[in-house]
Length: 164
Image 1 (cartoon, rainbow, N blue to C red):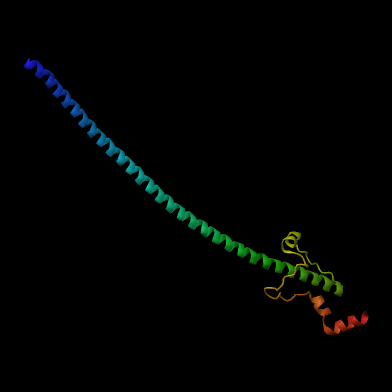
Image 2: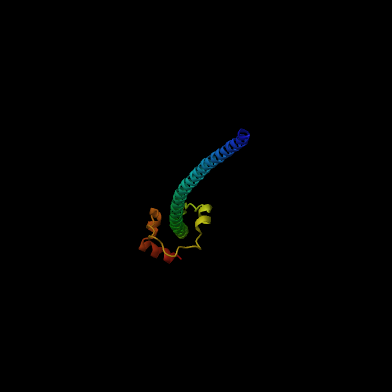
C-alpha cells in the first residue's frame, strides 16, 4: 500500500515538475520574444530617425535652392525693367529723330528716305506720346545729307527766308 500511495505521489511530483518546467520554458520563451520585440521596435525607431534626418537635410537643400531661384528671378526682373526703360527711351528718341528728319526734309524740299519704326516696337515701347522722363544719355548728333547741310548755312537760310 505504501508503494501504491507512493506511486500517485511520485506521479504528482513528476506532473508538478513538468508543469514547473513548462512554466519556466514559457517564461524563457516570453523573455526572448519580448527582447526580439524591443530590438525590432528599436530598429524601427532608428530607421525612422535616420529617415527624418535625411528628409530634414533634403528640405534644407530645397529651401536653399528655392531661395537662390527667387533671388535670381528678382534680379532678372529688375534687369528686365531697366532694359525695358532703356528700350522705351531709345524708341522714343528714334521716333523723334525720324520725325525731325522728315520735317527737315520737307522744309528743305529734299525727299529723305526715313524708315519707320516697326509697329511691334512702337507697341512694346511706346509711341511719341510716351517720351521718357529723363534720357540715359544725350542722343548722338544728326548726320544730315550734304544737300541739307548746305541748305542750313546761314546765308542760304537768309535767302530762303526772303523767298517766303
